Length: 270
Ligand SMILES: Nc1ncnc2c1ncn2[C@@H]1O[C@H](COP(=O)(O)OP(=O)(O)OP(=O)(O)O)[C@@H](O)[C@H]1O
Ligand SMILES: [Mg+2]
Image 1: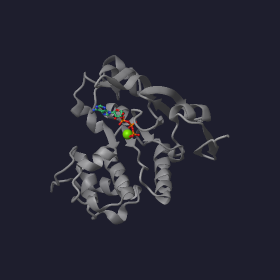
Image 2 (image 1 turned 60 degrees about the vertical axis):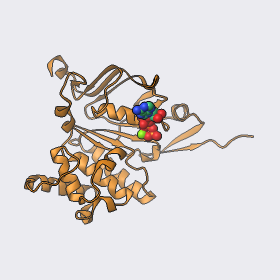
Image 3 (image 1 turned 90 degrees about the vertical axis):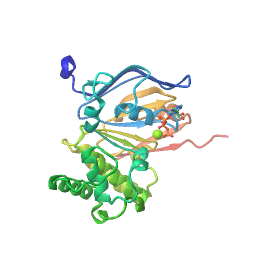
Image 4 (image 1 turned 120 degrees about the vertical axis):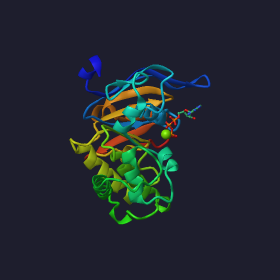
C-alpha cells in the first residue's frame, strides 16, 4: 500500500542478509521479481535457496536489509494477511500435513490456512476448486487416498494443488521435481510449463538443482552460491556455461534443446 502501490514488484529484496551463528546464509542479496515473471533459483546444496523462499513466503525475516512482498514491507505488515496471498509447496510442508487425511482434504484445508483439521462446513465452491486443481495436476484418481500413502511424485503434485487453493498471487515451489522418476519429472515439467505460460497463473519462483527441470515458460533465473547472487536475469542470456560453472563450482556445459535445457560436466582432460 501507500507509495509502494505504484510498483508492481511481486518481490523486492534489497541488501538482504540472513545471519545465523555468525554466518551469512544469505549475504546481501538484492533481487526483484516483477509481475508476470517466472523465476528459477539455481544453486548447489546449502547455497541459501530455501532460505530465500522462506523470506519470500514471509516465514523468515531478514537479519538486515529490506524485503517487500506483494507490495508489503516485511516487518511493517501483518504476516497473517500476507500469507494467504502466497502459495508454498516444499518439503517442509509435506511433513506438517496429517498423513491420514485424504488427498482432497489435504488440498481443501489450504482454503482455511491451516495444516490440519477437517471441517464439515467447507463450501461447495471450495470443493469444486480443490477438485479442479487436483485434476489439473493429474490427481483425479487419488482424491480419497490417504496423503501418507502417496508416492513422492503424487505427494508433490498434491502439494502444488494445495498451494494453489488460496488463489495465491505468488507461488513458491521448492524442488518440486526432486525424487521423481523420469516420467514423473517430464510430466511435472509439462504441467509447470502450462502453468508458467498461463497469463492468469500466479507469479512463480521455483527452486531446483537441475536445468533439465526448467519448464518452458520460466522467464528468469537467479543463480546463487554461498548465499550470494552470482547472476540474475532472463533465462536465455543468463543461463550459460560460464555462469552455471561458477555457480556449481565445476566446469559445466549448458545446452539448449528446443525449449529445454541440459547441463553436463566437461570430461577431465589428462
Ligand atoms: N537455523 C539455521 N542455523 C544455522 N544454519 C542454518 C539454519 N538454517 C539453515 N542453515 C544453513 O544455511 C545454509 C543454507 O540453507 P538452505 O536450506 O537455504 O540451502 P539450500 O540452498 O536450500 O540447500 P539445498 O539445495 O540442500 O536444499 C545451509 O548451509 C544450512 O545448513
Ligand atoms: Mg533447499
